[in-house]
Image 1 (cartoon, rainbow, N blue to C red):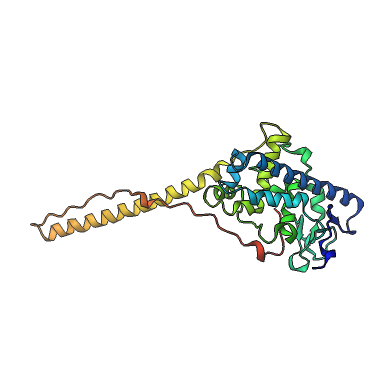
Image 2: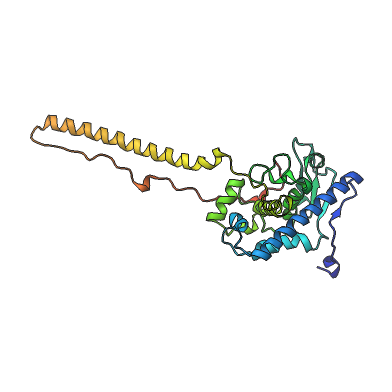
Length: 290
């Protein structure tokens, strides 16, 4: 690369295809993304990896990687990140499409579709209108949505920040059982930034963390119980069949006495919870928001 390629640019670059209204909203959304990243970084610098919020989303993983990826958004070179408002790939014609990283078509470019300008909220509305971190999408706010989009761009995500979890429940499970991925998981970086901002800025000392819907929190336990019950039932049927055979044997061989032991449950009959699946999003050129 030439020296010109390393010229430091402090503001995000917005394409001329964005009209004045879109440009205003986009600059505000990008400023919100920086605010979320800055606050998340400062929280970790203050508490390290020991705070309840940190352990909730990153487990016991070292904090340096998460700090670094937030810092890149705050103070990284923004020369190679272009946001545009036209529709060069035709994806904005798709229903419910808020935008997309252009991928192989243009790795440094992100398209923001009209729907985003109509629906994304500013940080000033954090925790309003019934929003909770657990129960609402990460792209509810323009800032967190753009934080996610920035991590697709090589300058900020470096091809290392990816989607390793599919939802909030998966993020919590990953923190407990596979925290190595958490500090460069795009969704987790968003969840942590949203929750700490809500708790320390929007509604101090309270926030709006929310909770998993009951159906999500009990599904795994119920599934394990169901499998265990089925296994036990199968054992019972097998026992009954064996007992019938024993009776038949006794009928044909009167001198012989055959006994069978009742089937007993065993801890190994319980089905272990699956480990979080690592989703390789590198092959997905188009990012479809919910």
